[in-house]
Length: 207
Ligand SMILES: [Cu+2]
Image (cartoon, rainbow, N blue to C red; front, side, top):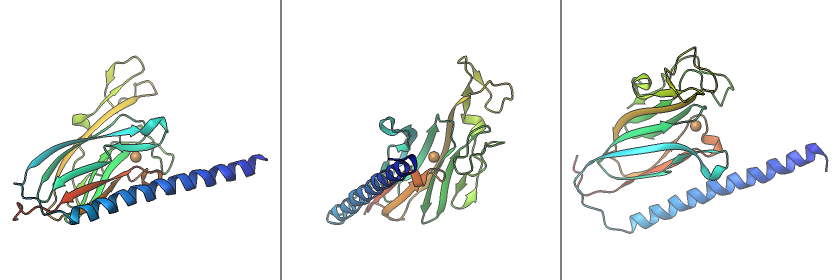
């Protein structure tokens, strides 16, 4: 088999595998929705939930994933979200809510933009809450580690490459409409870096 044919066959196999995964996830969500609709509404006081979500390489596949891939809350709940990344690629947590886009952007100077192959020249500015641009607070919550294990400023020009970043961004949102919302990374959505925010119908929410 010549190289071009092998590449084509491999691409086909990978395509089928990723399509199968997407169908599997959708099937799981659809069955979850139908299962939820057959249950009585829950009746819980609204609450604030502290949720941490990480970037991972699932099963050493080399593919970017969120961990966890599901967040389950009750209608009316507020989520205080912490989004952690220790990759050299940039990642976002992005979700379209009824109130607008909510986005945390774990991108730092020196990180790779997967979509362009370029490198970010400055810290992220793409953080939004209810469609309004807000500060990403990256400088406050991030730290970078150089090759000797020492902590250095993430925008340090003296930090020897490769620099491993541990980035933490925080934000909060409230969801008043029950449903299933897709969250994703704008850079790696096509590679499967997405998950679902499930908001259960809640009679205890009267707002
Ligand atoms: Cu990503």
